[in-house]
Amino acid sequence: MSGNQAKKDVSTRTRRAIIDALKQQGGMDVVSLSSQFSLSGMAIRQHLNGLKEEGFVTHIEEARPMGRPTKLWILTPAADRFFPSGYSELSVSLIQSMKEAFGETGLDQLLAVRNQNMQVQYARHLEGASDIKSKLDKLAEIRTMEGYMAEVKEQDDGSLLFIEKHCPICAAAAVCTGLCRNELQLFKTVLGEDVQIERGEYILAGGRNCVYSVSPAQK
Image 1: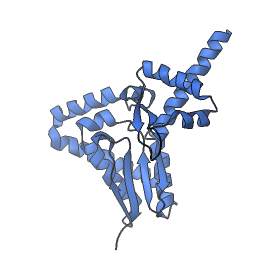
Image 2: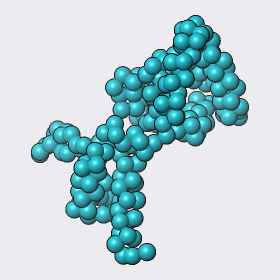
Image 3: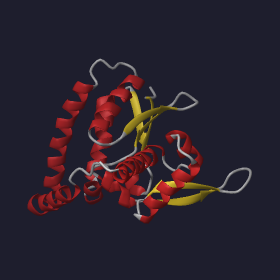
């Protein structure tokens, strides 16, 4: 491999790593990216400008309490190509075909069967988890394996957030809202009656992530 090709490969890997970091952490400035990748600010800017020219990133201005606004780099919708899509075109086509063949009622029945099968699969994965945190950790594991890039965050007040940073079925969910409705019901079922979960931020409503607040159910 030539020296030029080796440099190109390193650059490609770095740019993909930057895309992954922005997907995981949201808007980041050059200083944060430089620290994470142990690269100079100039090197990071070169990668970001290259990604911007390709249409994968853009930037916004974030006001700070002191000093000038900070430039935060974020992904554009075009960057979704780097993450699991759940065969979006096929999924949308199948949903539209099912609506034509079976109507909305028939589609709801098919979604109910899917939900029941997922309940069995998820319940098996959550076996042995007793408290809310361990249940959410197990749920995050299986959702991440399915492409949702899920994680659990504990807040300063002890409350928990269940966060999904990517939606591999987003295109399908956009034409079939029952998918998201069923997923929330799925979470409620597998977490148990002693757990209360509510969805706040929502990707299909323009949110960056799907975020669920989780707490013990009020008795």
